[in-house]
Amino acid sequence: MLIRKAELSDIAFIEELLIRGCEERHFGPTVKIQAKAMLEQVIKYGSLEFMLLRNNRKSVCTKKVEIFVAVLNGETASFIINALYENEAELHLAYTHKNFRRKGLFLNLLMYSVERYEKDMKINRIYARCYNKSSWAKECLLKNGFSVSQYGNPEELQLDT
Picture 1 (tube, helix red, strand yellow):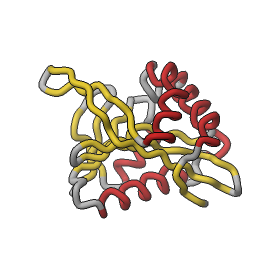
Picture 2 (cartoon, rainbow, N blue to C red; picture 1 turned 45 degrees about the horizontal axis):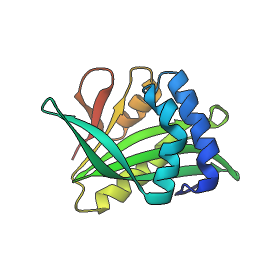
Picture 3 (cartoon, rainbow, N blue to C red; picture 1 turned 180 degrees about the vertical axis):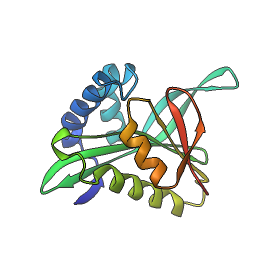
């Protein structure tokens, strides 16, 4: 298995998986509408604008965003999209094609991301949000050093330090 940064040629594959993920309720519905434009923006420029809601106040911010894909036997099989802002890294969206599930691809992308951001001294918080539907992802996060830091749907899971 190979993990590499996503390229323009990966957009159609990742977009298809984002749409499936929305239909299966692993992601919020706006992802489906924004998928292609979001992917093009990230791959070309490495950033996205996000709407933040903190202390009941909305604000727009630009986050650095990275997309990594897992390639198994020469086929792109899975992806993870990570968003970095200030001193935090959010494991934002991830999905594995149904033909490649239960082969450890999400775990490998997760560990690759965690190791990458743990080495960056500016990152002092790594977290993910999982909808209830994403029980496999949540289970994997819990088995690999994350704990629930905020309950709800989605739940927020934070890497224990």
